[in-house]
Length: 359
Ligand code: SF4
Image (cartoon, rainbow, N blue to C red; front, side, top):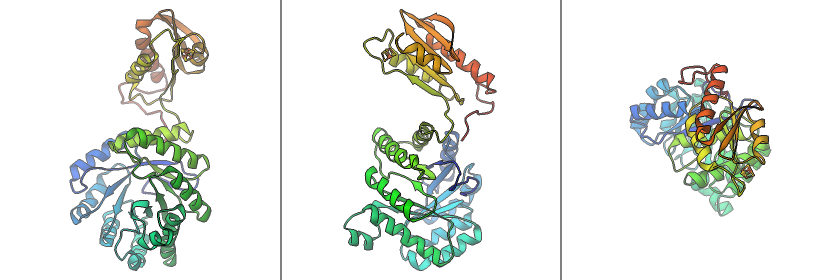
């Protein structure tokens, strides 16, 4: 468990992100946590590089709607502060905490007394110098040895409430590191491709790496690292889980790539439908198809769909054509029908009703 969120074993894979605010700025941090929560983030991590940040932890941990993990580098004293502050977990980076090994006994006792799990977060960029020397660079073996070495120190003190991450910016190295780790231990694993890059590149790297590992049953929590606002990380992480069938699909737009047979501007149509349905939290598959070749088949398979052609759109609901509308009315008709179906599912289109999306 991380706070109220079950982690490990048969628990669903959960989505994490990390705030980008100065943690000591309590209002800004809580505001960002609220935005992350609204976007589907289930666990949030906050950086604790200074005493001011550590001092802000009690109020942040108390007021956050989702469990807060304190991210500690360099200073073991902040680990104790985070545990005392009521944080749901603490992430430590063995490569960065000064004299960390000497403090493990005390940390294990404090964490155990408060029921706080510890994430041992090894990062290629800050690998323990001893292992860097031994392996020459941050190989999968080096990352795993570093993590398991730190685990063994905690285990010597009888502490096993541990989660591990072994992040690397290269998805291939990262995948191999996690595979190796999964072979060698039973601890829950937090997946991440570190410094994955700007949104497009980072999304691809994370989707490829998480997809490979999660399909093998490896990974319990995920964080997509993007050089973009953290809400984007949550959207991508959620989409990855939905794509893998690890989370019930929410609103899904199935649109064709268009081709020489298209009789309508599919890109614009799909974008307008997506924009019109943004924020609608229902498990609804909406097909937007450009012609009458594959269009009717896909539109029929979806909950709601359109097959366009000859300046018109055949509107499908649950496999049946319910009407044919002029091209200019396709978007509004699809949106109307989607809202009507959402209402039938008990969702208030204005946003006050129950969310149907599960996760
Ligand atoms: S649905 Fe029609 S327009 Fe779209 S890709 Fe298929 S054949 Fe081309």
